Length: 415
Image 1: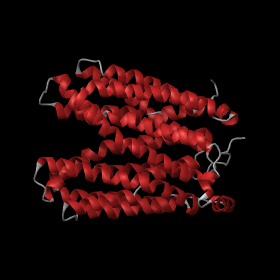
Image 2 (image 1 turned 45 degrees about the horizontal axis):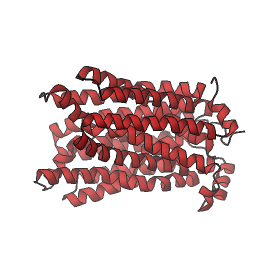
Image 3 (image 1 turned 120 degrees about the vertical axis):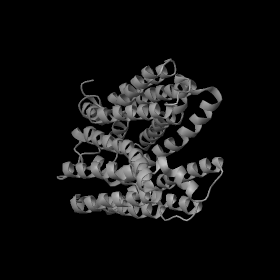
Image 4 (image 1 turned 90 degrees about the horizontal axis):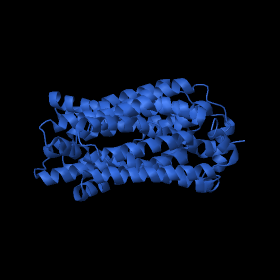
């Protein structure tokens, strides 16, 4: 019998709705800052263009640094004290911290508060842990796909809303509006989210707690391999984003509408992920999570390689949309696979490590891709990324052999 045999939480459907709406709201609030961050850095007294760029990058990355460090801690505390308190904490903490950004007096305070946002936040990652823990095994891929689509939708709406608010009302009000928006997620989570923690589950967590918890997890080698795969895949999927605009400029010979074209291409990629996430999750529940992950990566590898070769914009845009469709099956299937292998007493801790692994890929991917694109040309980034996803295909095939027989049967149905 598989490790993860507990029944689904009775309120898992309503909790999925709350988590999806809350994650959408908090991600909108988090990404609302992106187009206006350089403007705010300039408002805080930084005049040199190079310094504005540098401080904007530091302030942006600061949140991911502390979020990566804090994710395993919040996951462990969710295992021990409940996952609803962690979501309430995250939404309230983010509402306060994002509002404080609008009160910063200099760029150093801005970076300090951005560090605080990453430390106190983690609503979307906490939602992923709660949904993975509560959804029934046969619906886990679909539920995680729905949540992933909500998160991606927030990534689209946030920058558009931030630019509009800053244009009409000013940059400082945009940050205060962000705090108010996330406070709505706090109210919804506190009022509507339900978590029943049986006494037996609490006892199991306490018995497994402390420093020995990781050592008590079975198949740690396989779990570590999955965490490494998660970092690799996030690295691959994020790495091309910083050079998209430059690549479009290359394809269009520097037309004045590059910014508009780039926005459309970014949106098409995200739209593909939004559309495919729930469908691929449902398919993975039927035919096996690692099977769907394998074919998603095969498709992504082929599409990324083609993007390096297409000579004109519209073919490139179509390939980016198709890549988004393929990428929709990656995060839900990896998380669902980890969840199946981890006992309930440690699911928050391990999925917290998974969040940290994703942040590592999210931070390092754009940095290395930007360097490669600047030295070898933008097509080289797509080729290198295709190579990484091909490595991911091989890794998943190896992992399918390492999954224990009972879990393997779950993941190889109809195969």
